[in-house]
Length: 299
Image 1 (cartoon, rainbow, N blue to C red):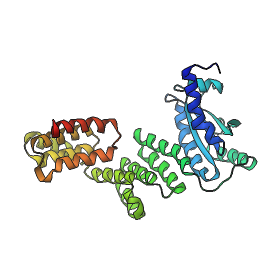
Image 2: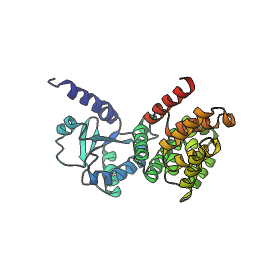
Image 3: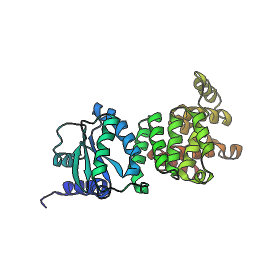
Image 4: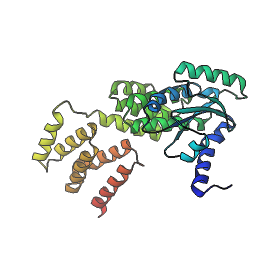
C-alpha cells in the first residue's frame, strides 16, 4: 500500500496494541514522550481512570511519539499530550482537554452510554497494559505510584499473582515494609506460590537488611578489614543490596563464593540467588551476574 518496511511494522504494532482491542473495548489513546512534563503529569490520571473503568470495557494504550513518528503523523499530532478515545478502530472523541479525573470520567460515561460496549469483568488480557505501566513505575523508582497501579489491577483481577507481586514490590521500594507484610499476610494462600509473589517476597526479605545511617560504611570497613571473614562479607553484601547498591553486593558475594563456596552451607551463593529472584531472572544485570557466577563455579 505504498508503505516502506518500517512504516508497515509501525502499522502492525499499532493494529495489535490499539486497533484490535478497540474492536470490543473503548481505548484511551495517549500520545506522549519522555521529555514531556505535562504528559508525565497526566499519566497517573489516565492510569487511574483506565483502572477504574476497566470493568466497563475501557483500556489505555500509550504511543511514544519519538518511537512511533509515523503513527503520530497519521493522527496529525502537533502537540503533546494528545489523547483520543477510539472504538472499532475509529476516533470517537478528543480527550486532550480533559485533564482531571472528573472530566475524563464524565466524558467516558457519555461515550459508554452511546457505544455498544458490554461491561462485566475485564478480560485477563485487558490488564496487561496496566501491568506494563506498573512495571514501568517500578523501573523509574516510583514505589508509591507503582503500588497504587498494582492495587488497582488487584481490584480488577484479584487472582493475579503479578498484581499482588507488583504491589508488594512497590511497597518495598517505597520503604513501606510493614504495609507489605500486612498485604502478604492477608493474601490468599493460592497466590503465594505464584512466581511473581515469590519474587516480591525475596525483595521484601532482602529489604529488611537496610542499614541505619552510617551503618553501611561501618559494615564495609569491617568487610574490607577482614577479607577472609565470610560473615562480614555477607553482612555487608546484604546491607549494600538493601541500600540500593546491587553491584557492590554482587561483587562481595561472588568473591566470597570464590574464596569458599561451601561456607555456612553455601550461604553466599544462596544470598546471590535470592538477589537474582528479587531483581527478576530476565533482568540484563541478573544475566550478566549469572555469567560471572558460572565462571566461578564451572570455569
